[in-house]
Length: 77
View 1 (spheres, helix red, strand yellow):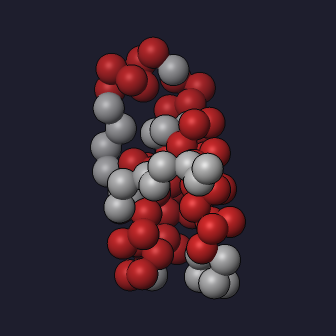
View 2 (cartoon, helix red, strand yellow):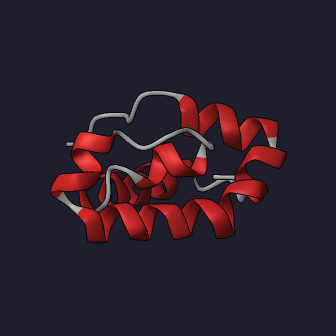
């Protein structure tokens, strides 16, 4: 997204949301939904790790953070 490849970033985000919908929450530094985490503990663990490792970089860049906070755009086509 920051490289100017908006369409590719939107597509990658859509795929990421399907693979682990909890990761976005973790990247934003928010608490995971505990019921969802109990149903898929491996995804919750993965989301936590993503949030720990990559979250600070996302939260440090205002434009990227606004993009991440916005609702997931529908897939093209």
